[in-house]
Image (cartoon, rainbow, N blue to C red):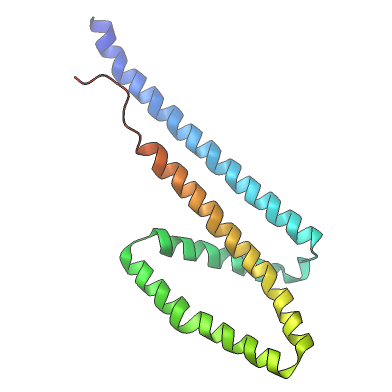
Length: 146
């Protein structure tokens, strides 16, 4: 009887440890999958000249993810920056470019594809990782009540 009561905290600590290890392994797997997919897209579609734009897209996606999954204050700030400044400026820039020359619009559109792909990849991977870390810690304990 005494050994069972002493063993329960050890079992709980071991389950907690393996839960952390499993979540860390899923996180690493998702990050490696994201890196592989984005590297393959960069190679196959010839985005290597736009590598800086790809990394800016990755950072933009990560910052957008932080804002979406973060506090209410960060959501307000992000919606202000994205909705009132950045996206309308980008739309106006592309409209002016399209009005000037159709070929230039297609060239700028081709440069936006890597940016958007990396940003979307960062948001999706971050959302999956967030769900893994939040979902497995919210599971109820299977131990018997005291």
